[in-house]
Every structure is written in C-alpha cells, then in structure tokens.
Length: 105
Image 1 (cartoon, helix red, strand yellow):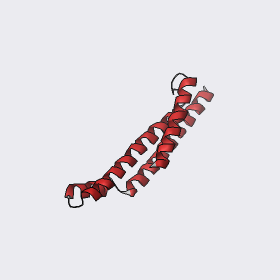
Image 2 (spheres, helix red, strand yellow):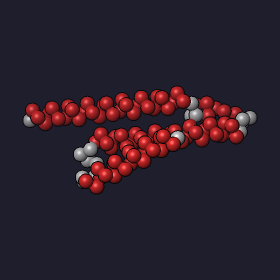
Image 3 (cartoon, rainbow, N blue to C red):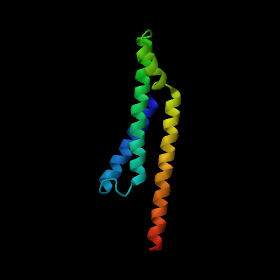
Image 4 (cartoon, rainbow, N blue to C red):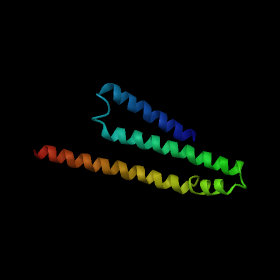
C-alpha cells in the first residue's frame, strides 16, 4: 500500500505541476488519463485491503467471505492494471490519429 501511495502522490504532484503551467490539463490528455486511472486504482487497492482485513476480523460471516472473495482478490487488481494500460493505449492511438488528421488538413 505504501508503494501505491507514493505513486499516487507523485502522479498528483506532476498533474498539479502541469495544471499550473497550462490552462488545466486540456493539452495533457495522457497525463489526465494516467492521474484518473491511478486514483481509481489506488481506491480499489485500499478497498481490497479493507476487504481482506474484514475477512480476518469477521471470519464466520458469509457476507464478508463473499465480499472479500471477489473484491479482495489479487486477480481483480491485475485485471484493473491491464485495464489501465489498455485505456492509456487507446487514448494514445486516438491522439495519434487526431495528429495525423490535423497534419493532413
């Protein structure tokens, strides 16, 4: 969790730096996507940790076992990490196509 917190703080710091130097994050679409995905991922990592803590705190409760089995799994975090990469790739390809259209015009 400490590693993800450090990554989140660094991403927010860089986004704030870009925000100050430009008019928002309009020109920095990739930075905006990275910060949004990083924040979403961080929230889900914290949720997974809370689910695992709840599983140990209430081992006899069926609701917590079902909740921690789905939300607290490491597989979910792997899928979300892959989703972040695909989202970044899609935005990059869209920006590249927009740049080609702009150059042709």
